[in-house]
Length: 389
Image 1: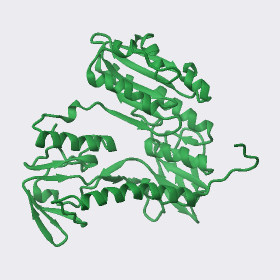
Image 2: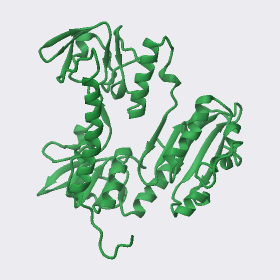
Image 3: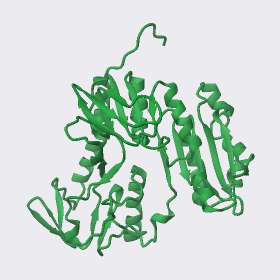
Image 4: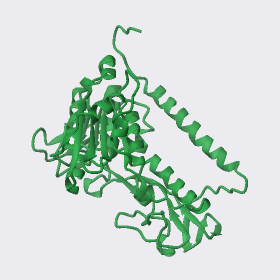
């Protein structure tokens, strides 16, 4: 199909589709729960009144086993001077049914980058303001720099080193005052998205009455089997600070269920860090970064291949990014990988599975992958390893 003329996005239809997808999922889970035999669903705020005593609404509940799974919400730092200034968080952005004229995003990490690229493609002017010297600082510098270039090529404005940041209302708009090494000292936008992290929903649960320990950030302290400091109470999901992803939250459930019901001994420490950044092209990550490997002091090998040398990427005309893999030089086990490029969020799983098996990298190097795919270049990359310096 060929379009001749300007293209615009109908944001009301975008939101309507989002609402349909979300409601289908939420309503399905709710219906399943309420239809489960011997399961009572109470929709109310629950608070501990003792080690194994919870009050939900007007009911007092006692149990030998209690599982806390209260999730997390956006963190809004008080130092921004946000009082009196209209702002959005990740949840508020999901309710937007209009196109912001100029969306200013405070925070250059995963949530901010995903919304930033999305709304730039919808047609908004977008500025991302990051306090640190680079985007997504938990990643290696080559990943951060490549992602910055990808976003800037699409017209996203990126401002780094915004050490002294504050916000204030200016007429009907929002002004972000910043102290960057270069560029304007003020940014005026129509809308503000605060995306600087998450905080657990644990501040109104009465955890002190139960004697449940939390860390300085409010996350519930758990052991390797997700037990809290109180016998008979477990904490799973975002509120325990052990993952903050949907897939790690579900794995928390799998660990607890297997240990309690199947007599197994599964542990959080058996889990390999893995996640995705869902910009276009996506980033798939597993295990350690090169920075972490260097810090560990172990001898390691590294392989790297630009997406310009991946046949599937060339055929699709989507050659931004690269793939990178790290291997222990002595054990030959894979330590970590980053696939930034087309289908990177899927390709990473072929590497992740070999990591879980603790097999040498030669297993995947000698595997015969289907042509033409992105995955077929993983064995090739493993055949070109060199010492990590």
